[in-house]
Length: 408
Ligand SMILES: *Cc1c(COP(=O)(O)O)cnc(C)c1O
Image (cartoon, rainbow, N blue to C red; front, top):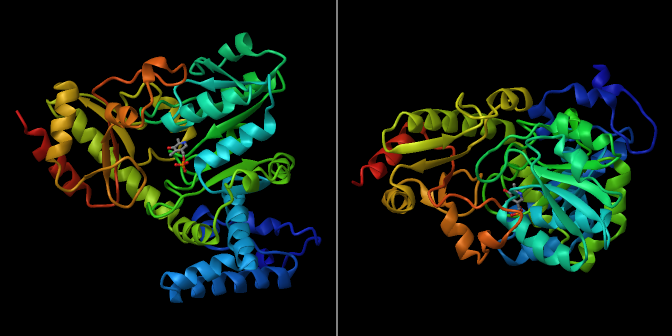
């Protein structure tokens, strides 16, 4: 038999080395093989039971399944293992949302008086959390432009505990150089955490570029169907163990439900397939938009006009489904265009099967975030339209956008 299947290792629960030789899609579908066959088989049986409980339960019975703690442990445990393998991390912790994952990380690694270097901008929800909860806990956010990585040298103090940034950034898809930032941070012994939600591990694996910690909002591409929430912190076993031991997830009620873990595991199985399709459709739409006379600008990592195009090519294996653009008709044009769309829905979520679009300035004001007052968000242009390209036929999406642009 193939050595991948027969190789033994100790009883620590570590997986066979051979599993890592499989391709990304295979590892997203199958579980790592365990040296202790019984425990591996046991976990699989539990997942099958979880699956049955979900399939048979119409409403009420699903709650019964949630209460079955063994199963809860099991689905979440499998998800944590799988995500860690896909990112190339030693370990992972899964929580109720992406924001919960970031909050748990920050609250565990930093205490009162500590500083976190943050690339501006960050996603509006993360910025709101930083400015309320974390500030109240005495944790200081230090906004730094990390598009110039050596800016870190000027901003580090003896209280700096973490460098945190998104790449690609939400909503403009700026790309930051993970390995250059990691090198500058390492010179000061400071860890870096990368929010890789816009790319997912199918397109970008920050740990391979020198990051210490990866954050994922599982709500987005990894689940991919817009029907549940989740978040993950992935990285060194010692850090993940520390997050687990603080039990903040129980005190802050951010533990994930078994039902959510089950749905995310199911979504994860098709991640690579979906990302290919999201990426090719978004690239086609970005190119078409760039050629449209009503369009003022387009931002997509794999457009040659993107300021970080070469870096994006180096760091990511695809552009993902997220793009941003602005119209010559500005804010009013954006609102008029969005209201005329027939196929693409207006919505604030992203990374779903169906395409979603939103006017970013309206989104931040409905969330009562005053961007002007914030140190952590860039003041976005009033014209920014963010589109999460779904899995429909690209020609249909382009046709929908074209008819909507015809508003003058
Ligand atoms: C949505 C999002 C988050 C927050 O994740 P939730 O699961 O919605 O809490 C964090 N970072 C990025 C880049 C996101 O897009």
